Amino acid sequence: MFARKTVGLAILSMLLFGCSKSTNPLSAPAGTSSVTMSVAFTDGGTAVGLRKVSSVDGADSIRIDSAIVVFDRIKFESNIDTVQVDTNANNNGEDNSDSSLIFRGPFIVHIHDTTAIDFANQVIPAGTYTGIKFKVHRMEPGEQGEDSYRFNNKMNPTSSDSAVTNYSVVVWGAIEKNGVWTSFELKDNQELEFKIKGNFTVNAATSQLNIALNFNMGSWFIDPETGALLDPTDMSYQNMERIQQAIQLSFHNGRGGRDMNHDGHPDD
Image 1 (tube, rainbow, N blue to C red):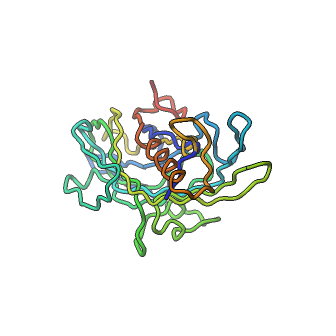
Image 2: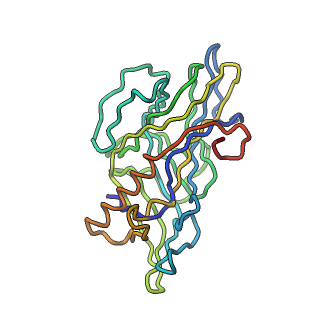
């Protein structure tokens, strides 16, 4: 279960960068482009952020040190308005549409700061797409995933793939209560499906593109109804349900766009 607090994983924003990727390069055939998927987690100006101490109205403080999020079946859609999603069901059904448009995963993404993380590379048909459908996926025991550490040829410095077995999101950090800091490990087992809108073009004339998903983690431990901090060490059903709702909301409210000026944010 994942409690909902002001962690900052704000809704998924899709950015399209014009930079190239030197790791795992692919040679794109005619009529296609090699697309690298990335994800960035920011605090979005909220009260909680990665590796920083924040407070709300002088109350308890919370710090996020690191996290793991598992993505699955990231699909490029030509008509996102017609796409149906189920954000609460354990939907393990297969999508029988064009497999060349789907990054299958699961993708285990390790987050330690607000720097964009590359986690997958695939050749995608050239075309204009109006959005992306994706899953936040609960890893099953024994299930294999593609790890962002391995994709970027990095050693695993702290946490392993096994930490997310039976879960879709894991967060490590600390919360201050009455002047005392207490470490926490928050695990969320939700299986969720979302879609985000955003007109962008995969151009065959461009050999490589970087499409980044941008989330605001600052909302994960903020009560969406009251704006109060949610305590990730409070394991009560009501509190954990609020945290899960906050996490759902952070993925649900997304926008898409291109980053033509390469400032790390979608263009207006």
